[in-house]
Length: 472
Image (cartoon, rainbow, N blue to C red; front, side):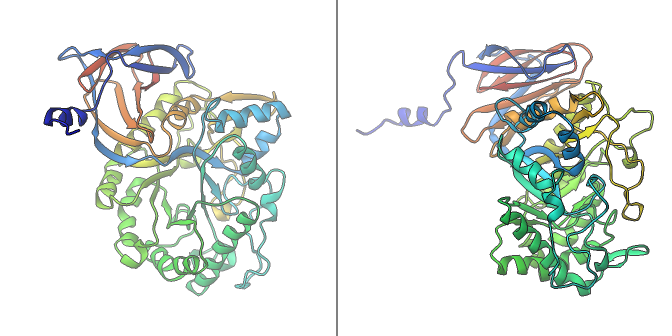
């Protein structure tokens, strides 16, 4: 039967059921913690009301996920609890129904400042052994190692894994004490080192989705962007392609947004290097220069942006007046603001550094020559008091969980307009078509705003210092 032009036209207009239900989950200073509230309903909007307008026809980045890092320090703290509390903690981090449902995780390729179950190490500490005959991930298999930690988490949820490296084996550097740049004569050996790592983890049943060649180059390994570019296009990229490796390559991750904006074009403007680059990575330790990330997003729209590390740490410039680790709920608003700003700049993934630390902000590794001082107090997502055998979920945990739990992989950030002082709003269309709005009230008092969508509106009462998820 032939349809009239009016029938065809109506079929193209998004249908919004009158009184459509909105599910509500609140975290607030008053004590709510991802607490389900009575549902709300869209109704006819009132013109001129202060609030936000959502338009899913305006589309931006696709979300990869949210999470933190697998580190020996976290495994040590986790294993200090009794069995029941261990499982409760893992569930709270990875179960998408009963916990935060983390979906994007970082891990280390050998030593870093938080690989604290033993001395500084690499997977092949035999100088000049370019064939990697002695390559071994044995330490990662120990009870406080990364592999048991990752496998336990996988029992509760699914997530992509991104692995990165602070340093290659010391013998690949010109001089670990004076010149920590990689000697180019070892570029082939280093490419083989990465391959051995990926294959060894595969044998343990762990597929590493993304390989980042250098974590904070110029801070740790003192390798310039030009050499990262050449290592990628002439050595690592061709070797992994030849071997049929499915892991995607992320060339490096700079320690702040300014360096990311400055050095990523050196790598990506070379066509041979760019074909191997799967994403643009950066860290958030500057807490500024979001415009540099937005500019990268505009310049390379085909490459997703990942914020892959940030934390409060005295060594990273956190004022000594702030007590770390920080148990204050209000700290969540600070981290919520960072997440909002990075997503507004185009980030597809947001990964915190320490997932679990103890009541002292440790344990940390010590190797001053590798930039790992003593002490090195830091702040985690979850604090495990090893003395009292207690678990403390920080404000950061809850604000991050609002994103990881409700903004799932494949969701797309959509258009949001409107300005309300002290209030931020981000909206997403889920992979299955539903809508998610995250609204954060940074005011010390409650505020009412209006949310508008498809000509319908709903009045929202936002508690003081809160983040609220709306689903419909």
